[in-house]
Amino acid sequence: MTKKSGAKKPEINELARSRDRISFLYLEHARLNRQDSAIKVVTNEGIVCVPSALISVLMLGPGIDVTHRAMELMGDSGMAVVWVGEHGVRQYAHGRALNHSSKFLVQQAKLVSNRRSRIHVARKMYQLRFPTEDVSKLTMQQLRGKEGARVRRVYLTQSKRTGVPWDHRQYKPDDFNSSSTINKALTVAHQALYGLSYSVIAALGASPGLGFVHTGHDLSFVYDFADLYKADYSIPLAFDMTAEYGDDYIAGRTRRGMRDEFKKGKLIVQMVHDLKYLLDVQDVPEAQTLFLWDDREGLQKFGVQYHDFEEVN
Image (cartoon, rainbow, N blue to C red):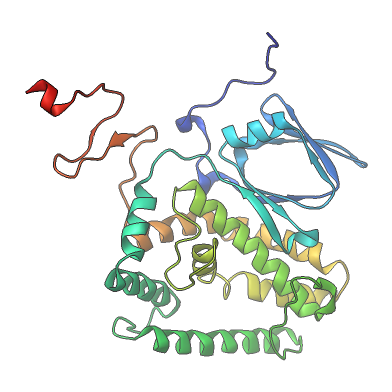
């Protein structure tokens, strides 16, 4: 039998919490292997070892060669892995983060499946964006109108602040370079925000696809959640990067700028708090919690050999 190298698989309570991790790491044109409990990154410039349990989401760009042992470590460490396009602007596939509690998922499914509770959660999302106004009686159409006006004001305010001309949002998924510099920066900044949002959602056990405002896409809730933070993070950062650097390596500069802003603003901490608030989940059970569902007797023990009722009687 071949002996596996590296440390043993960690227990759930040994892993770093989402709020304590580095937000994301983007890699391209590199070979990834495992060295003990770290991801060994080999590039033409040298070798770097990245502690796997301290990364929230790993974005793998073009030219990545990753070994089975490296992927095994990422999964054991609760790291979300996303395969993306050049500059990190498109998502092709993802690997789900480690989680053993369904409390967030069950609550989310319950809330999104009822019209009244779904609107209630959507209003909570908009209330976070309009903290000085009461939106509890507004319809979804009214909320969309208010949000559209708010976002337009945000773009115009950032344009005036930085001196970067602004016309409209333009994004072609298949032709990144055809956009204006500010639109390139916005695309990269938003994608970084989506990656971090997905990581927190998956790490806490919620579903990225069960959206309350967006619907019909496997990342609907990611878009819902990320929209809460664009006005404070991705939009102003994109205008700052464009004003300072123009089109000079704008994708890489913007991505690194977002990483720094996530850390400075402690955004992961805020995201965890907001997700618990939106889904009304505060008391999260310990991992390794598994039961059998019963429509009459409630939750039953797992791992018990049950007998036929008629046979017993």
